[in-house]
Image 1: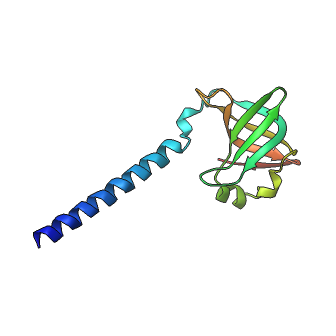
Image 2: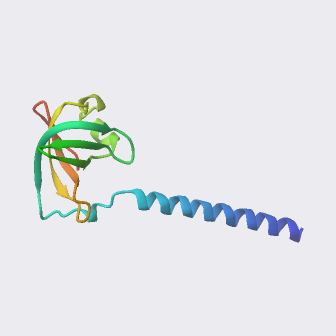
Image 3: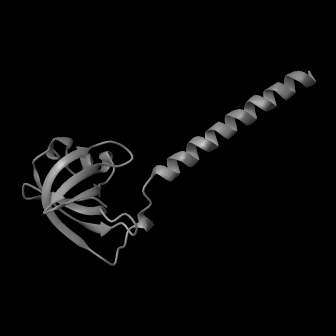
Length: 124
């Protein structure tokens, strides 16, 4: 009986540890909004080079003049519910994004809104 309880406790401890490691890893990968400077508004128009419409949030690579910006968008469920479908974010499409620069990553911004083909979508 004692051996059975020890084995079960060990298995439970291993599972708990694995769950905590996975959760910690997810938190590290997620972009915290505190990392963006909301005192500096950016407003760019450029060409979409790449896009993703996946959780935890969509992303764009936007060519603006001689610089490529990594643009963090809203989660797909929010974009979809506000009318911004994945087929709007295709390579070669002109897009205007308004948002905030990352405090440390010089080519990344968080978009508050995006305008494509005259339609503006609020992302926050």
